[in-house]
Length: 337
Image (cartoon, rainbow, N blue to C red; front, side, top):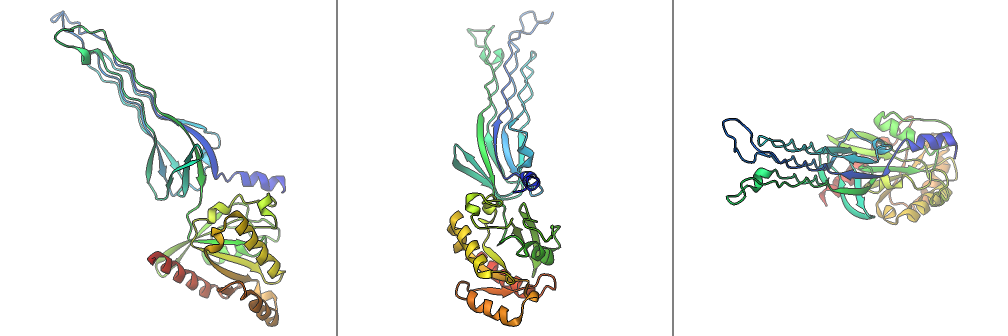
């Protein structure tokens, strides 16, 4: 793969390992009240403040985990130490770490939780408890204690974050199958359309409103033979269609469509059999460039594999309305299950 493509691709971060740490608790204070009017005022050392907690919080405006590329350790604020005159130290502020929706959280390779909704919070590290001042230890038989406790250290944990985009419909196919043109035609999303392979080098989200319902489509980089072995962009982005309820298999009808279909299905199966069990719809693209006879032959051959087939031309938008109505109906049925 070209080094420039690889460099741009790496700007899209969907897997990171980060360390989080709660703030340390502040120490308690040893102090005695000293005033001319009360020479034996007794202990007045205040408690320290508690350390801040660390939370992950979902933010729909965050699209990748790129913010963590150089921030490997994130720590909440420490609590302040206690002071005399029964002054309690200020508690440390909590730290809210914004993550994109669809982020899965793993600790020691074990799934912990996932963030699926905007402003959804998940506590990942507790702040340390506060230390106690000597006033806390005053008793009738111990009126001048020189005892205090120190604040505890905040909890420290290491997590792996994996982003799996939340989308209703996944668009898959080989390079130059017309995926980007299709996405632009149905949504006017800012996509790159070019006559070279891998014009899509990172997942693209697009929204389409149908009958008052907003549907989200995700376009992923093209699959090629032996993607499972790391060729092309490999399997790096297939995780982003795992949550989709409907998959559109876009195939260029002007080329070796049967070979392309077998390649797509094989690569999806190699990654995860579940992807083949999802509602799949074959979209034969670029139908404006073939004869009616070739198109009918392709339909006959493809019906042996797919139950749902649509012929589309994204430039003229031919066949797109029927396809979108099908997608809407299938998603509406799934939502009622």
